[in-house]
Amino acid sequence: MIAIDLGSNSIRILQMDTQTKKITNHFSKTVRTADGLKSTGVISAEAIERIIASINEAKLQGFDFHNDFVKAVSTQALRVAKNQVEVVEAIYKSTGVKFEIIDGEKEAQITLNGVKRRMELLNLCMDSFMVLDIGGGSTELIFVFKDVVVTKSFPIGIVTLTQSYSSLDEIRANIAQEMQEVQKFINEVYAKYGKAKLFLATAGTPTSVASMKLGLTFKTYDKDKVTGTVLSHKDVDIEFKKLFAMSKVEKIEAVGEGRDDLIGTGMLIYDSIFIFSGMSESIVVDDGLVEGLLLEG
Image 1 (cartoon, rainbow, N blue to C red):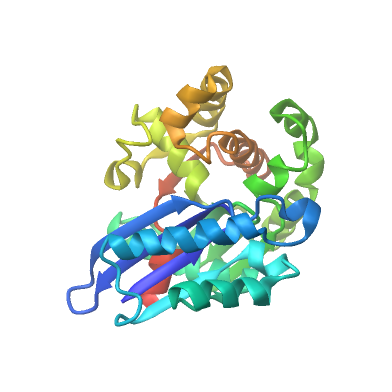
Image 2 (image 1 turned 90 degrees about the horizontal axis):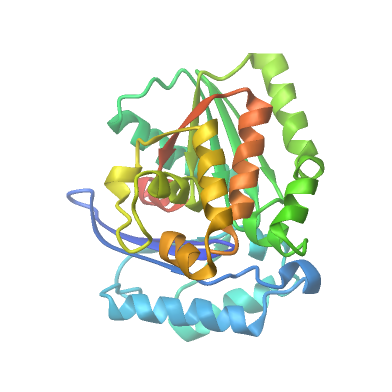
């Protein structure tokens, strides 16, 4: 089985042996699906070409999209794009992969399944926790209180927010205003259910910050080392200051090309969640939407 998550910034592909439940192949690439989307309202021809090229590259890496069972989903960028139908058709025509555009609620639920599976493996208590998923075009927050699940997707992502301002300093000056609805949601959840006990963080920003804290680079990134890493609010601030002082070449070495100019924005979103939630530390997991897709079978 193959699962594909086409996000607003990157594409992630995993292959699993359905008998052993082991991951047998993996692929990820920065495709910047949402590049220019904020101003044009459409997915650009260049972005479509990057997506198609990445899928074809994955084929060369051993993924058989024609003979294996494939679950392919796309999220915020295609949710809001005026040309979503044309984009899905163009990708299908060129690669044979048909994407389903899922809503924010479904995205959050599938992501939660992936995170919960990792929590079980880490022996973490699942009675009361919050999950943060910072994407390229949206940010999802998921609260779990025993049998109660509360989710919300916000149209704030590292690509769209970065492209709304001229500099990281400008984003930092406006982040509180941009995140007002997020703060309101957290306050409402806390008023009804109380404060969550654990804070789980997934997707590229938390994993990149954890990787930096561990002294890893983009090339030496290790999912097993990163997953389970505890990041405090102070850690995020420290790594943000390090990143801010880096040259572009150093940023690319640290977090990868295509993410180097976006990760600072992600850190500001991450920082805001710490402030709004009153949490002092988070547990980073590499698992998310694509792993959740595999669990659906």
